[in-house]
Length: 461
Image (tube, rainbow, N blue to C red):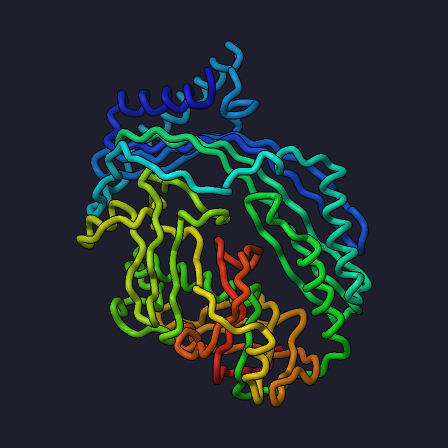
């Protein structure tokens, strides 16, 4: 018996207990982390996890729960008899508690069910690479040191960050006739470089396959920004044209992805509410949600209901074309699911801003009075519905005058509106990068982006 067999057991038991809709997600994963501080390896660890989650509906009453450490081993491992009994006992307890609690839950009157399969799926290239799982501890240290050395060659004095790897085997079973299994892998390298306490640069690299990971280029960019950021002066408030690097614009675009979810629209926290088929961005903006992107960090053959994923145009030539849906919300609004379940709410896959033709240097040449912002943090919305927000630039920030970088600056804040940001995009770089990080909710693919006439203020103390 395997984790797949246990998942089938759980589905059968829930249906026997009278559940109308059931979704079982089970997974077994192995992850590793190499943390480095001030050019030295500080910590190495490996983690193993297994779990099973339950989405259960009876009489439109919905309950979600999960159980951890269902088994020891992988999805495919044969489980010993003694462990089978322990695992079944753990599952039985969760099911009993689920069916007991679901009786006292208020029904969700606008719930319209899950997808009915089975479905056919297309294989997505480059979402699993056994070479990531086969990396030894020494291999991982070598990658980290390679990134550090590339940063130091650019002038950085010290570097800190992390290298993370992951491998997951996943199972999806539903009462709608879906039974799927899949494998995925990922590798993430983040390096923050310092010339001194006032001059730093940051860059990340996220991939699903080892061959696409480039720690040297990542370290080089981070180190070069740190070196350029030497001797910063306090920036001045005012209106500026701004070039956002992929890491900084990725933070902004993750909020755009969230606002495209019908759940956010319905909840009144989307700045895209009531704007379908209307101009929300510059005509140069083409934005997609894509669950089928080869090598995409969040690419998957199917969503949480088993519906095949797809490439959905969100914004085309500046016009808001689509929201994203799961099955229930699509039925409610007389639309078609976009393959973005999220059982409770539709969620984005890979958010892709179509790149342009300009190099970073060409973007800089277009600016008479502006800023180059390489990273941001603490993005906070003052009003979700209107899209009013503020965000603080960090690491290298550079003042541009007459098409040339003049000096390093700090101590500024971007205080703006997301629709205004999108509408004021005047050019796009040709250097798209896949971005992921603490400040980026999900996976974003974006180039450098030039935005005109933005409001820059000073942070309040």
